[in-house]
Image 1 (cartoon, rainbow, N blue to C red):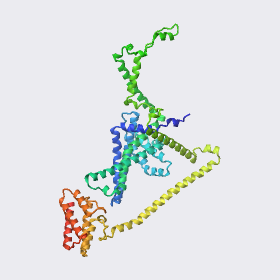
Image 2: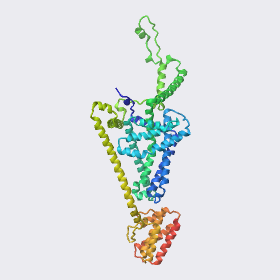
Image 3: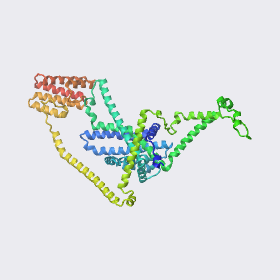
Image 4: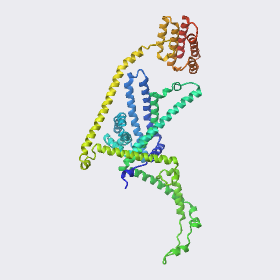
Amino acid sequence: MSSPKQKDQRNLLHIVEEATHLLRRSTATAWAFYYWGTGPFVAYLFFFWSDMSRSSAAESRVLESSLILALLYVWMKVWQALYCEQLMAMIEGKEELAPMKLRGWLRLIASQAWVHASMPWLLTLASIAVLPMGWAYAFYHNVTVFAAEHFRDGGRTKPLLNKALTQSHYLPGQNHTMIGLLTVVGLLVYLNLFASFATLCILLKAFTGADNEFTRQPMLYMTSSFQTLLIGLSYLVVGPLAKALYVLRCFYGAARKSGVDLEVRLRELRGQATVILIAFSVLCANPAQAKIGDAVPPSTKISTEKLSQKMPVGKTNTPPVLNVHGVELEQKIKDVLSSSEYQWRFPREHPAAAESQSWFGKIIRDFTDWMGSAMSSIARFIGGLLDKLFHRDSQVNDEKTPGSSAWLASLEWIIYALIGVIVATLAVLLYRTWQRSREEAPVVAEAEAAPEINLESESILATQLPEDEWLRLAREKLDAGELRLALRAFFLATLAHLGEKRLIAITRSKSNGDYLRELGWRSRGREALSANFTEQVRTFDRVWYGWHEVDAGTVSRFAQNHEQILSHAS
């Protein structure tokens, strides 16, 4: 005999199919709710990460930037709650939602703020512990799903948390399988975005002939800022699917007590019955069907003699007339209901014939069934283990095995001790890392304040010093009579300025000719700038790589040419 949990178990593929159909039916208002709330947070998260990781003034504005990011996070969660309410209303067939009172709005904002404030670090700890990850992930989704409708009806925060926590234990095997599926989908979306962006950069270089930052430095793909951008875009794509899946889970979980799924199904059946009655009325009103006898085919006529032989004596031998009109009506109704408009409303048929599915479909279905059963077994095992560890069945255990309570109590204390050791170890590591960063910070600052530059080295890059430092170094060499080194310092100052203006991208692999071609492409319409830089490159190449002598006049003209480049590039 099957248990209630097994009867309530729904195939994950059916849930995913319902979620995708729900997203296809979603209104423009629902989509606007989601992206109006999530888009600003993702965009500012990318800006915040880039600014904090690269800007030299990040420390001075970290407080206000963090506050803006936190406010946008709450903004996102509130609009996602409204988005989930729209999806739930579509499932339940609600056309209009009652207006929410001011108290409901305040409770909604406050609950989403303080509940989801714990989500990043709590999910991180849950993922480290592995076991409660699925329940914690489902809990935060459930809070978002139930919040808007709960506070619209005048509810409070504590019942909302109890409801979300109870729902998080609904079908744990399905929940963990769903998390694994969302992880795989998110990874595929991330890889597609990564490949699309890389392909676009390569095609842009192939068609325009101009390098971009990513083709010149492929390691930019691995920077934290670019990875943050890809992860944010992936979240924008996968987020609606995750919300739709958990909206359906909450709907079916709550329907176990409220029976709202039966009400929705009856409403659908009433709609189907209306279609059938309309079709019946249309067919009955057709005068072409008035003559029933003419519509009876010869093969369906029943001989009255045969009927009289089968009828018992004493009863009338009135031959029944076969109602072919009813047969045709039934066939018409079946044809109407078999159309694509109504076919999705019927339960999915599972044909027994193997040829009804392709080999790939059979493999996928077998794999998902196996994964679901495996996750259910693991969830039951974990639940039984937690019951034993935390004395949920302590009375039964005491009656059966008197010595088990002491053993379980000691095991529980061992687990608590291990958790304490892990937390203490993490605290010590964080403290040592912070202390080491404080000790290394002055050394790094001192090293950056006084870099050692050897102008004779061929490995110097113009990005090693700002333009003002190169000019200061050039004047020092000019006063010391080292004209050749002064000329090179002026040239590096020119490159540094053009690099700051984004007119060239300075890399170790480029030659001066590459810089000339790049500047010519990026400074179209500014011929004077290109001409001055061309003269700079030719003079420098003749002096540095050739045998031409350099004098004070050459250096003076080179410095004047540098000033003209500054004026044209600004």
